[in-house]
Structures are given as C-alpha cells and as structure tokens.
Length: 206
Image (cartoon, rainbow, N blue to C red; front, side, top):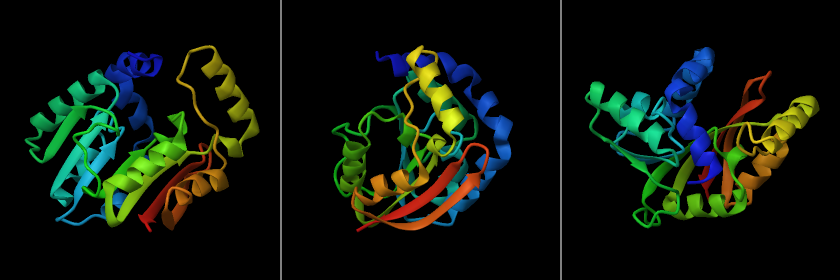
C-alpha cells in the first residue's frame, strides 16, 4: 500500500464531513456536470472517494464505474449507494489502468479533485483519452494553487513533511495545457471558487 493510499484510508471516515464544509461548491459541481450527461451514457468516475458525486448523478446516466485507490473510501461509497438503493454504480478498489477497463468504453470520465495529486499527469491524460469513446468528455475540477504563491509554498512544505499527499500546484493555464496535450479540446473552463482557485473544466476527445 502506498503512502497516498494509507492517507486516504485514514481520512475516509471524516472525508464527507470535511468536504461538505463547502457543500455549495459540491452542489454547483453536480448541477454543472449533469448538463453534460445523457441517460444513455456509461461513465467512469476516477477517484470517486466516498461517492459524494457519483451517487447524486446516478439517475442521470445508464451506468457508472466508480474507482478509487482507497479501499476504505470504496467501502463507504458502497454502503451509501446501498442505503439509497442505487443499483447502476459499480464501485471498485482499482486504478485507471486496470485491465477490466477497455479502450473506447466510456462516454464521459469524471476527474474531481484528482489531477493535482498525480505524479504523471501526461500518462493519465493519455489513458483517459484511450478509455473514452470518440467525442467523449472529460469533466474535471482541480484546485490551481499555483495561482497563489504563498498557499503553493505552504502546501509544498506540508507535503514534504508527509502530512498530506504530494500535490502539484498548477496554474490554470498549465492545467488547461496538460488537458489539451492529452488530445482534447476545451469546451468549458470556469473558476468555481476564488479562494481555492478550483477550476471546472470540460474537454472533448479530439
């Protein structure tokens, strides 16, 4: 188990409570995401956490494959879906490179609060492109701490101390470039929160 997996396993129990401190942003993300989905869509939720978003959009699509590197997060997500009798989500402790996921399988891939945690963004973007059907969408939300020098420096120090996983301090232009270089055209790019510089980006596979 990696340090990152251990960290997210430890924080799984309190994850929802922490995230819902900014519940309005989550509501905004869910509503904006729904606008890009259809009832015939098969969706992959990469880094699904405890299912905060997947469970809310399940009734808007045909099926969701929701994956996370934290087994504890997946356990909680499954329990929450079962409590609401949601049957079209397959929660799995898996990676994006799991062989069960074949090329051209998905209409949309959700990547919420994940891209800044990746060691190799380029390889991941290539894999996302591969998994999407022609014209498929990547729908993402990513904090761009590179826009705030002091916050970026602080996060770097905390990461080096091992208190949080390693995080990349994107600038918004760098984030957009990393998505475009993966073979996508930007459809929408909006900053949702000025204080955390969270960017909601939708891009279409070229």
